[in-house]
Image (cartoon, rainbow, N blue to C red):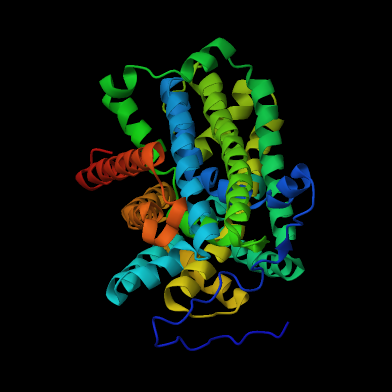
Length: 449
């Protein structure tokens, strides 16, 4: 395959056929039509786990820790509800990509006026940079906890992951998926060990998955619940998932597309349920260790690290926690490059070499972190993480609403258009996310958060 130039010109004809998503890996994984059910299912597994990374990134850790420390197991129901909402929205991304052959960014470009698609593009780029910022800070905090490195040094070192992404993309998309799944398994293994050490009350854990009146009667519990729900669906995951489902090569007949949607949905649902277990484990450990010992003011990752070993009575507890955080930060950055490439190519039909795209995205995250830490000191990292989530919240509705409008449209989706219960649940989910994010933003800007 010939190497693409660093840049290519964008066609002026908006009616020209759109370029494919991620051309280096588009339809690169062949699905044998004559293979068994289990073989075909195995070949579809992978993209969902790349998406699941965004649901267990460092930006979610502080929220889960605070929820467990303050309210024990009570908010496990919110974690479950957030995961169910995410499964539904990612299912719609799968349908859009498989049925139309377009990712969400390409579909916005072809369906909406030019000024609107450019606006969506700018917002998506800002959201990706904000998400990358949280991942940079998470990995840098982990490096500081493990190796006593200054946060500025840790932020700079995270830029080296560009080499890893470039190497993996060169080997094939299944290698990217395998590395991501491996890192997720290590993170889950770390928290399985923490759960054994923490010895939670499992009856209390089970009761936490039931809705509690506290969720609406206690303003603080409501605010933390809004934080969990508001940070659940990452905008870049909606763009990315609609693109990476197209890495599978299958027949373009209606029955084959329906089967592809079914297998990809199995992949996505299982991966997001796995992410649910990881997020629930973080909250359960926090509840068992901090809430039950009276340390209910733990809200920062650094505080949790310092208290885990003394409270659990084993020096390895804090190390395992920090190591899992480092893996989470590194894992999350692997999908950032792909999402950035999808957004730029889809909205602008503008090609950039992967290493250059990675460098631009990374600098957009590293520079603000380094500047703010340099000016205000390391005490401002928590505020920086909060504002990165605020930026993501601002952009979310601009990805969710177009996704629903497109997958509801019979003109675009034909017989695959959302109907009945799915359409109602999709709008209910979107409305809840938008309203909760609006409340979260209002509280941040008014100082109530």
